[in-house]
Image (cartoon, rainbow, N blue to C red; front, side, top):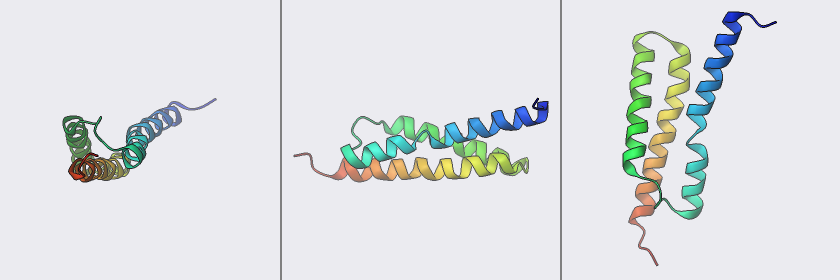
Length: 92
C-alpha cells in the first residue's frame, strides 16, 4: 500500500503534468489551423497564474513548483507568440 507522503507526491506530480501540458495540444492546433479561436485574455490570464505560482515557488524554495511552472510559462509564451504570428497573417 502507498504511504500518505507517496500519495501526496503522486497527486502533485499528476497535477503538474496536467496543468503544464494543457497548452501543448492548443499549440499544435494553432500551428496547424491558426489561432483565431483562442483568446488573448485566456492566454494572458493563464500566463499570469503560472508566473505567480512560479514566483511563489521561488519565494518558498519549492523545487516542484518551480519545475512545473517554468515550462508552463514557456508554453504560454509560445502560445501567445504563435497566436500573434498567425493573427498578423492576412486571411485569404
